[in-house]
Each structure stands twice: as C-alpha cells, then as structure tokens.
Image (cartoon, rainbow over all chains, first blue to last red; front, side, top):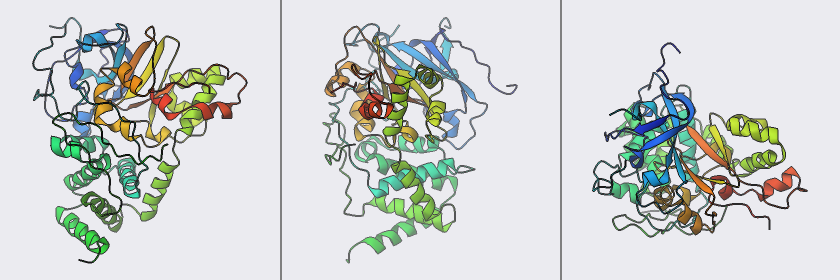
Amino acid sequence: MADGIAFLFNVGDRVRVRSAFPIGHVRTPYYVRGKYGMVERVCGAFPNPEELAYARRGLPAQPLYRVRFLQCEVWPDYAGQPFDVLEVDIYQHWLEAEDVQ
Amino acid sequence: MARYNVFMTAQDPRRSHHDMGGLSAGPVEPTEHDYALWEKRVDALMVLLSNRQPPLLSVDELRRNIESLGPESYDSMTYYERWVFAITQTLVQRGVITVDELGRKIEAVRAREEPHG
Amino acid sequence: MSDDHDHAQDHPHIHRSPPRPDQDDTLTYYRAMEAAVRELLIEKKILTAADVRRQVESMDGRNPSGGARMVARAWRDPEYRRRMLSDGSQAAREVGLDVGPLKLVVVENTPSVHNVIVCTLCSCYPRMLLGLPPDWYKSRNYRSRVVREPRAVLGEFGTEIPSDVQIRVHDSTADMRYLVLPRRPEGTDALSEADLAKLVTRDSMIGVAVIDQN
C-alpha cells in the first residue's frame, strides 16, 4: 500500500522489544520490554491503538507481529521447562532488529 | 540479556496498574456467576456503540478510561462496573452526552427505582 | 457454565482491595449509570430499546457450543482442520456461526505442545464465538500468574501437563482472539460429530483443561 508503513520484519527474525515506558494507552506489556524474541507470525497491519484510545484514527496502519519469547528469558525465576514459550502480539514501532544498539 | 533489578517489581512506577502480567497473586479461584441483566446491557451497549457506523466509541478508548482508574477503584470495582464507567466517560469525552444530562438522568433513575424514603 | 454464585473472594495480594460481590437487589450507582446512559441514548435516537434487547439476546445465544462444533469438525475432517488453523474466523462462518469482525486464530494442541490463552492487559476473549468469559479468566490472579507460572495455574485447574510437553502461553494484546484446538481424546473414533462436540469444554478451548474421555 503506497501510504502504508513498510513491514520491516519477517517470520524467524530475532527482535528486541524497546525498553521504553511512556504513559498513555500501551498494548505492549511491561513484562516484555527490553526482551528478545522471534517473529512467529506476521499478523497484518492495524490502526495504532495508542492513537485510537484518544479517538484519533491511528493511521497509517501499523504492522503487527506475533513475537515468541522463551519463558526462561522473560522470567529469571521461571520454574517450568526451558522450551516453554510466551507469545505476544506486538506492534512494529515497539520492535527493533536484534543488532540495534 | 535480562537484568533483574529493582525496576522489575510491582512498585515500579513505570508499570501501570492494569499491566499485571507476571506479578505475584493468589490462587485462581474458578468462580463464575450468571450475568445480571444490567451487566449484559453494559456489554450490549459496548458492542452496539463500537459497531455502529460511524462508531460512537472504540474499545481502545474504553480500555484507556479503565486504565485511568486509580488502583483502589480498579481493584474494588467489578468488571462491568469498570466497563459502564468507561462507556459513560467515553461518551462524555466524545460529546455524545453532557455531564449535566448524565447527572439529571442518574438522579431520575434512582428516584424512580428506590423504595420510598 | 456453572450456576455457582460464589463471589470472587480471591485472596488479595497485600495491597489490593477485595472485589465486592454484585448486588442484584439494590440499585447501585453503576447500575443506575447503565440505565441512565441507555435511556439517554434512546432519547437521542442513537439506539432503540429493541436494539439493546436484540444484542443481549444475541450474546445470550453465543456459548461454547459454537467453538465445540468447530473442534469436533476439525477432529473428523483434516481439510477443515487445516482451514481452521489458517483462518479461524472463516472456519467459524463455514459452520454457520456469525462471528462479526472477530479475527480468530486457532492454536492446536499436539502430543508435544499445549496452548493456553490469556489477556493480561484487560480480558480479551473470543466472545463472538464462545460467549462471555468466566470471572476467573478476567481475575487478577489468572491474568498475573498464567504468563509466569502456567504449569502451576493449570495445576490449580487439575490439569497436569507432562514435562516433555511445551507450554505456549498466548497473551491477546491486539485484535486477534485465540482459541485452543484441544487434542481428541482416546477411544472416540466411533463418535459422530455431534457427540464429539459434547465432549469439548470451554475450559479446554481456553487451554486450562484437557479433554478426557469418561
């Protein structure tokens, strides 16, 4: 789409959730901020809920990804299995490629 | 690499009260209740107003309004109390209803339905 | 769904206020607010009383049997299962369910993977398919703990997941809603689709339970 935001990530890409803590309506849970995960699925593009929350249109649509995290990398005291995972739907503007400083 | 430091606690001011994934909490009590008519009506209003063309509110505005409740209110209000608060707040913010209309109508409802005295 | 009127007296974390039980017999402030908003919207001709009544009835008609029907069909029809995993909403419509704008993603339990669904930030749930969620799904205790200690929480539901099975917790943070396709229980090869559907519980489609053939 000419006016849309380009999709930066593909399935299998390793990404880092930005370690930012703004106020406002945020749909990236606190517990994944600063964590590394892998793109499990490209979900499509959707109006940005951070803007919709203020009755604004939230356009252009923001790419959305399912990101898979290893539980033991999210919780230092995770008591389950080392291969257990947690999957979260995260908007592109909250994600960085793994090697970004 | 994750660093577990003082910021990763419930007291971290950067963690909003509703954003509770990972906090310590008690056992999950498998409670349910049959929804009261007023609760189903709250749900109905939410669906009708958000599906309307054009919508009169979005679920995102509702969530933002619920998130703005202070911790005491958030924890002590029931699920549908939070949602009716959010629907009402959003409609006032959007100018669909005025504060004055709302105040008068709530009083009219209570006067009608309360037992004498 | 249980008729149990136990109120949500979950043991609060030290700083939390316990939730109050709903009171159907007195007009609380918020019940009055609901009536007031509804009446104002009707007076302003934004809605009619019939609209509200129809929507209440529509939601009453949504219950786990819709999801159960999809699961039973997927168990018996590998092509349907494939379509369901590819586009859950379309698979729902295929069996005659009107799910509106729901974006349904179906996740499949296998011998090596067990899925469980939560919304930590609020209480997102595939309502247009399964109807209204149970109180516990919306509770602080579930929302807080199932992402961090899923095996312990599942244990509280009486569900033990073997240690060689991967647990995948799905946190519904955006527009997608998730449904678990539970594993078909043993010894059900001879059952019709309708009889299979009767075995499928809501809790197995959320992922806090598995289905045993009794």
